[in-house]
Image (cartoon, rainbow, N blue to C red; front, side, top):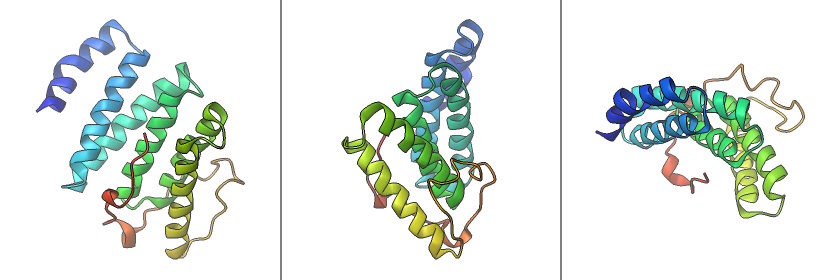
Length: 165
């Protein structure tokens, strides 16, 4: 399995030789993405591993790259993973971060920016259906770190929408 090779052989070399480097973040993102794909078939442990790797990638990307499209892509993938786990409030926060970067870098009329905004609307709708009302853009992510697990939507299939990375 490629993931095990990346985790056991490649990642330790990257961490030792490069430390916090964009390439290390890219590898962490790739591992997270592979686990995210596996989580579509078997959510539990794979989704947690995807989440952990995306968060590690984002820690490096946010520090080194800041408002970069790779950072936006990791926020979007983390959002998908959180959505899959039913953590709608956290997913919404991450998707909003991706949108903010994409709007700044690509502009409001770019297809990825528009698609990200549509996903925010869908997440907001699902979140509101779960009985929680929120304002997506007003808090600038103040509550995004708290998270809310919504078990009613924990079985959502990520295949129901186009993944924007």
